[in-house]
Amino acid sequence: MNVYDVMTRSPVVIRADTSIATALHKMSEMECHHLPVLSAEKHLIGILSFGDCQLALGKLLNSKKLPPALTVGRDIPVTSAMTHAPIVIEADEPAFEAARLMLENYIGCLPVMRGETLIGIVTRSDLLMAFMAMSQRLRG
Image 1: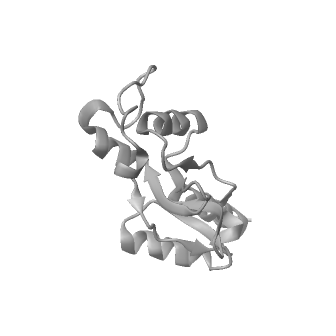
Image 2: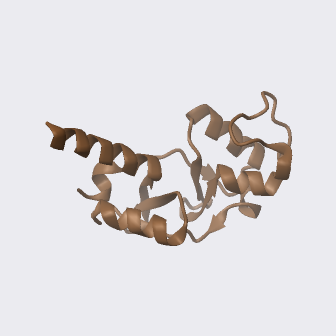
């Protein structure tokens, strides 16, 4: 099983000049916790997680719910909170390599690249769902 088999294809992305408030709204809307950050030229320059936003905004966020009218963070660009130059993986790598990289580096996702192009994202949840599906198949 390769990363391509378990990744989320065509992930929701944000631009570098996006505010944290907008990013959090997008995360809430799409029910995700990680957003690849692209430059104006559409190159991957970072990854923004919900945890990054929490650190940037302090105790203004709780771990599960966002305030309905989120105004905090609208003047803070995602570039101030994101992880710059994230660890990435190629789509044809084995899925266990993605799991190894995430465990060793204490991260929850990896942008999936084909050369210089972002084609997906693989998260802990993606790997867990693949594990559950494989386990069910083995149980027969």
